[in-house]
Amino acid sequence: MAEKEEKKTEEIEKNEKNENLEQNLISNGENGANLQKLENKYCFWFHITEEIFSNQISKQTLDSNEYESQVKKIAEFDTIEQFWAIYQHLQKPDKCKPGIEIQLFKVPIKPMWEDDNNKKGGKLTIKLNKEYTTIIWEELILAMIGGILPIKDEINGIVFTSKKEFNNLQIWFRDYNQKTIGEIEQCIRDLIQIPKEVVLDIKQFFPPQKKKDHNHSKKENKMDDKNGGGGGYYNNNYEYNNNNTYNYKKKTYYYKK
Image 1 (cartoon, rainbow, N blue to C red):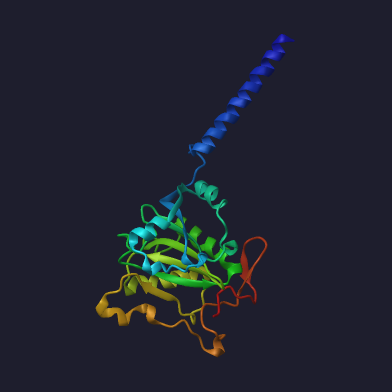
Image 2 (image 1 turned 30 degrees about the horizontal axis):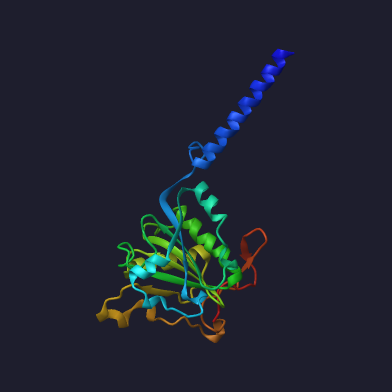
């Protein structure tokens, strides 16, 4: 009888020891056999823009040091498990109030135009209807951290900004030149199936003064009435489903105005 009780006690202690070890491995991220390493290390950042304040402070009036002080680091990760552990606690884009900005960048790049990795580059902006922002945001950031984009070395980060009537997604890239612009635009169009007739807004962070009139960003985001009217970004092919996927239906996920 005593022997059985002793074995039972040993078994309980062994199970408790294994459970504690498992919890330590999970919490410390040391379960190397199961962790899926990413090609790069990434960081989520958080910023509250002027839209959330009543006194409407323009971002352009802040110098780089003032703006940097307002951008807060959330967490870094370099495995897919760490990504999901962080992401599940972040507010989803379609639920954010106007003025909230979430940024995902490769480490050590900061979400600032003045960063050495950004200052020679630019950004591609997509306007989205609020209810479809989360699925497109997830599509883009998973493609970036998964390394499946053909121009992955050029992409520095992705920025989500919540507006009153719509949401913005920006893809920040390293070098602003015609070859890179064409490749990034085609890559993003293919990934989330943006119609060819939609003119994407692409801007250079620091355009040369003598060439500013030739800036690619001068293109207007307008469309003919026969193509849907209203201008902006649209697509009549997607519907957001309960299982967090989208398929071909007569729904719009691009913002039309």
